[in-house]
Length: 84
Image (tube, rainbow, N blue to C red; front, side, top):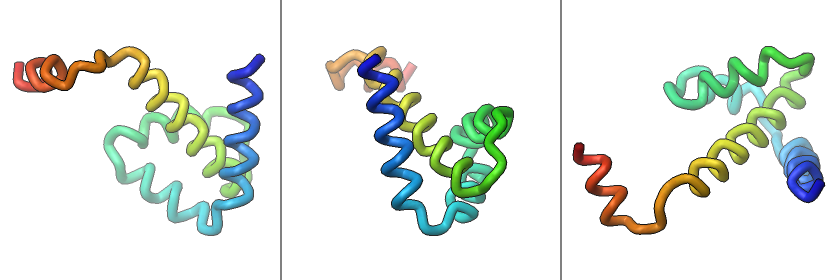
């Protein structure tokens, strides 16, 4: 329940702060990584650009949080993995 509340709070914050949703959506379209996340968000029933941009911000935050939870805290390991 806690995570869904935080997600809802983040959505509300993003929704209230986004002034140029089309710029965010255009950026995500052109970004190799986040274009896939945008495609996933666009598959939902969200139609308005403002809502779509807010959902995208939340989805990006979720992915980054999951990524940070799975990556080790040791920067030497990250460097070694990146160099392989």
